[in-house]
Image (cartoon, rainbow, N blue to C red; front, top):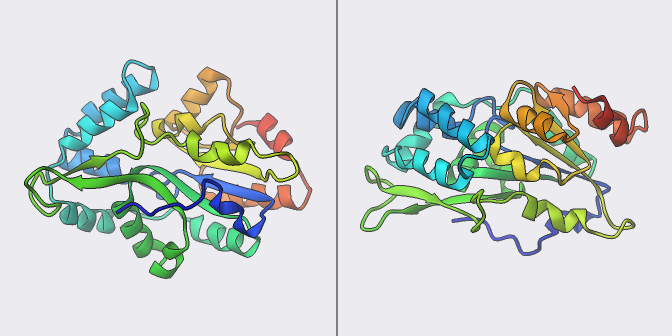
Length: 257
């Protein structure tokens, strides 16, 4: 079910000067769809938060913790998607940001620790099916459990994208761009909020970390430069200033929060 990416540098097709990578859950959306399922149909909020703290401070891998959390969600996949469509809202500034980025030849690439069928269903609902068709999404997938279908109770499980401790190491998608020769390398941005973004945090020229979330804690602990944001309207303002030459990536990163 995962969309095949023919080239590790697919976003270079239009020869852009900038590329914007973004997490999906809790970044493009106001709520995290996985957290919603885990808290409402699985182990509950308290246990979820404890397990993510273990990941944040290195006591266990994201891969193992996240699978354990999702294994507790036995609601059929179609029922999960129905519930998410009713409860997950788009970041209030993302649609304007995405339209502006496309108009200015700034490819947007979604890098998600979530699952593609859920992401595509939500984006089709929130920004439109035509928009989603051209939006690169690199994420995990879902798979039926042995002897069951996705529509059965307890019938699905996460299918990780790679063998890393993250399940989907987002840094691997960014690195082919980051290592290009200077004369071909675009300026790279990333926006995220949580523990699935830890591997990507050091890979781009400017990191946007959502205020009050785990990625900020990680960046502060690891001394990773970042710029906080509340929504994509703020990110749009920063990118417009960078492109207009009113500020630089280096100055924004140095300014931090």
